[in-house]
Each structure stands twice: as structure tokens, then as C-alpha cells.
Length: 391
Image 1 (cartoon, rainbow, N blue to C red):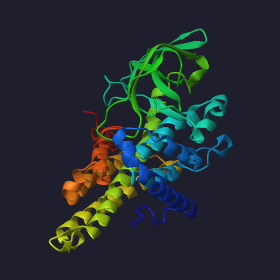
Image 2 (spheres, one colour):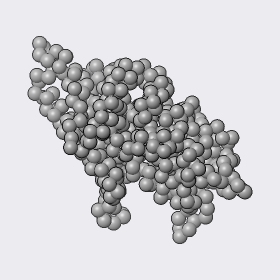
Image 3 (cartoon, rainbow, N blue to C red):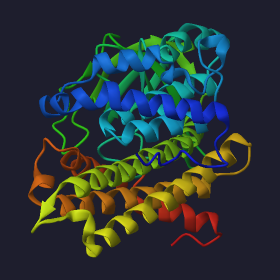
Image 4 (spheres, helix red, strand yellow):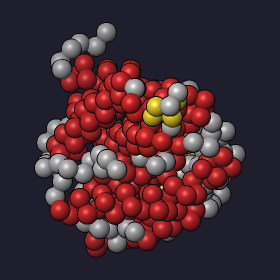
């Protein structure tokens, strides 16, 4: 089997061992059961528990809090390998770590880290990232949820939309972006506040019926006079927007890796199918037109992989990576969508059936051009980083 991310000077022995471990896990533990869970729209609790036992949710976090002491590169390698088999499982890890737990690790006080990180790193509990609102669209700053201080508490009111991992039985908390003060220099004061699951006034609405990612958890959230301790403020008051943007930049690399995994998974499936399927007495793999399709698919996946490698390497090295993260997200999500379409074409009628992995890949691909900032937003970021003026 093509190992995709395997042979590369980029991978240390430790990273290659992690990649190979997750590849084996994905094929042995995820592949046999995920199709049924996907069609039933059931969250893969047993798989998540096994991922936790494997240490995947703690990859980039310090060992003192139960993490594995790794980095974002290791996390993205794991996400890519999972996505080669299924994106619902991959996004559960990606959102749980890159978006849910990272804000606690990055901006939390020592007390907050001691309280929440161990259970999140172990995978026993999940965290969610509450930024998006229906009225905001792609504008991350369009936050209307409010939090006013009353004594030693925050009182939160508002709604959030499309929040991953927010309504599972093992969800521990949601970090919520809320307006906490009057505008300063024309900018509203947005802060990040941790809201534990089960807090009175915090309601998780019925999960969405989605085109893809059907075995992942996505919900709308509402807050009605929801009270949490003032000490649940994450980081500095009024700096929440900047914090969320920092987290989003890192999360885009993770989604790029997920996109590459899906793109590579399409190649894997096509190679297997083309070696077995016969038409007019010939294997599909003998037809040059189809060979060219797969060659183009491989070129897209390989190029996109190099893009997320570059962005993640810059992040780990402490170098600027905002533009590179946007580039990786843009080209990788495009590769995923095109490869899924081409794989479906190669499979023909079989590719249109939901029981095939290719059918799932086709349904899962489109959201990758939307979530974590649309492709248009990525182009805007790249243009700004090149010094081009705002329209």
C-alpha cells in the first residue's frame, strides 16, 4: 500500500513510528466499523476511547498534564492517516485537539491546566471551540454572544453554530467567544470563556443532519443567562479574538492534513479497485486514461502534503506561518474535492453508493473548502500577507 506520508526526510524515526501506528489503527479499528456508524449518524464512542488509550488526544501537549510531549507535526500526521480511512474520526481528533484543547494549553492559568488538561489529553473527555455564529458567516469577528460580569460570575447570552464535539456524552467544555465590554478604538472587547458541559443556561440543540462527516458531532449551542465563575476567563480579557485567530491559524494546518488524508484515501481506493475491476476483459488499471487520472490525483495529494509539511515545520520552529497555513488549507481542500470527484468517476456507479469509502469521501470533501475559513478567506489572508491592500 502507498504509505503517502511515509518516505520523507521530514519524518524523524519517532514521527514515522507514530504515523505507522495510526495507519495500522485506522485500518484495523476504524475501517471495519465506520461505514455502519456513518450511515446511522452515530458518534464513534468506542473508536474515540481507543484513540484516547493510544494517546492521540495528547500528542502535542506537555507530559506533566498527561500529554505525549510531541508537537503539531505529530498531530497532523495522525490526522492525515485517520482521514485516509474516514474523515468523521479525523475531524473529531482535529477539532478536539487543535481547536478544543489547545486554547486551554496555550492561554490557561496553571489552575485551569491542572483542572482540564489531563482529562482532555487522555481522550476521556472532549473540548469544543465556540466561535462561529449564524449571522457572522466567514467573519470571525462578528460575535454577538455577550458575557457581562456580575460579581464573581460571567452571565452569558447568545448562540453558536456548527460547533464540533459540543454535544457528545464525553464533552467536558466549550470555550466561547463573547463580547465582554464596550468598544475600544472602534473594536469590541471579545474574550474567551470556558463553559463546562451541563452548566445551567447552556443548551445543546439537536445535532445537525449533515451532507458529510455523518459520524462526527456537530451542534448549535445556546446560552441563556448562563453563569460561570469569573475565573473561567481564558487568557486576558479583551484578547479573546486575537487568541482565537492564533488557534485558527494552527487549526488550518490540521484541516489541511485531514484534506490530504482524504485525497490520499481516494488514491488508495482507486488503486485497489482498478487492480480488481474488469471491463471488456481488461483490468481498469490497464486503461491509460484512468492511469492519467490517478497520476494527477497523486500529484495533487503530494503537492498539498508538502504545503502542510512546510506550514507545520514553520509553526514548530517558531517562525511566521500564517500565509503558509492559508496556502496549505487552500490547496489541500481543493485536492480533496477534486480527488473525491475523480475517484467517484473511476468507480462509476459503485462510487455513487454510500457503502463504498469513495461515496463517503465524496460527501465529506466539500466541507473542507468551507470549515476553518472558506477558500475565499484563505485567498484573502494570502493576499494580505503579500502586502496587497484591502479592497
